[in-house]
Image 1 (cartoon, rainbow, N blue to C red):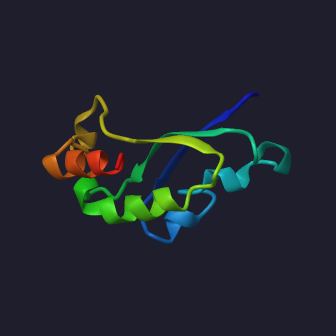
Image 2 (image 1 turned 180 degrees about the vertical axis):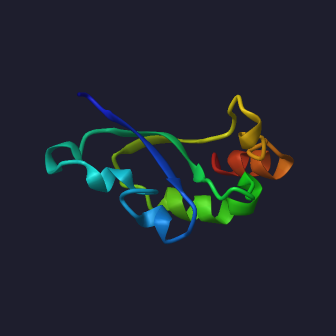
Length: 101
């Protein structure tokens, strides 16, 4: 494979750094660890949480990504009501815009 797509979900700061949650690249065999990595979805999945509550946590997580991560996509939408808390609010939009600068 030319690259590897991964999902990263967690519910605590500590879990955001664990291989089975927020750092799935740590589970890759040594021969695959240096390929381009694409984090297709990431986010905190605490049932009562909202993205805007976790923006500082996301910033820390993004800054800790390995150098070979090409992109990381924040999970924003889903088609079922139980995921409606992941709405795109003004604070989330402002934060996403600030990442470009």
